[in-house]
Image 1 (cartoon, one colour):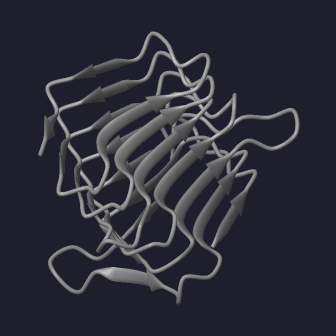
Image 2: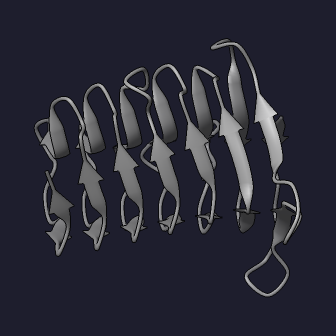
Length: 178
């Protein structure tokens, strides 16, 4: 599913919400392609969905001369994607929120959440387990991001991994790693 140039507003976001109290809306593939692509997307909300077995479950990217900001991913179950559960990628992929999700890598998915170059993103109250690399990775020029109150356990390498030349001013606090 691709959302190119989706432009909601803070008071009227574009929302994709799974059913409440019944079966979960599931998007699944066999490790090929990406489940959701949000390009130049602003104020998009994904809630109560299961995203399973893609290369990247959710990929948020900026387009030429634009941004992907103020998007929210809440109450999702992200399972067994090949590389990443949620990937926030780009210098103008800022102020997005990844909140209260479950990432089960099933020893197949490299990262639960990967922030590359983005600023002021919030990653909080997520549960990430059985990733082959890290629960959360911030890299390249990711700065001023908040990673708080997550539980990253049984990952093969790291709970939270910060790498790259300009990864600075990030706040990582009150997380559980084991």
